[in-house]
Image (cartoon, protein in one colour):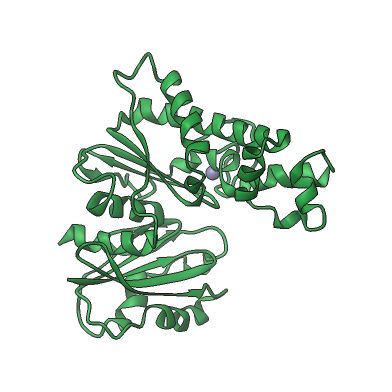
Length: 311
Ligand SMILES: [Zn+2]
């Protein structure tokens, strides 16, 4: 079995042919264009494979209606997709009538974990994708939680600071504003901008806007005080948010994906310890917090899983 998986992101459109074991047989990516007019051509360039497929899955940021594949709400750089039906954009590439499914990108990542990864066989699971922003998805009683309007599971927009910074969603103090690559980079930028004593200032003095989340973790691992404080504070807030989520969902497992998960034990060790401490009274056992198993081509494999699950 072969399925086309498409991952529409703010900077890149990624596509691939995925087999029944979750292996990517072919993959391509192109930069995401700035308007709908150029989008169809970019999509054809990324996803116009010669292979005959038995279905197509699409993951996209924002609120997607999985019944119609319509993009309901999509703030940010790909805002121009709001109101379009993703299936209609993809069908011309397929050559014949096959099932097409679409959903929010974090839910798509969870679908991949449900079919081939850490959520396989689990009735209740949570997923956080820690990247530029924070995506989230929940499996409840064996099914992906969608809610009344498809907006359920946006765990990155849990409020953890009532008076915190403004978020892309319009609210203040969401988890995403405190723990995400953007949030960590913004804190580092402040350190550099103020000229504070730190390796970050040494490394990025001439190009402060190029500071990366990965560099902050690296500086922290090397013992830099300012970087350590940024990382510790971010993980402290993430732990608080996750403890609250465990009390709500009582999952069998928490799966953490996204590029910040590559920080490994520097993230997972303090996160597990603080979450366990915060939930010690209400939770009967320590909930495992594990790294996502589908680390490569996550969006493409997950999008393919969306179709495989429905077969
Ligand atoms: Zn928000």
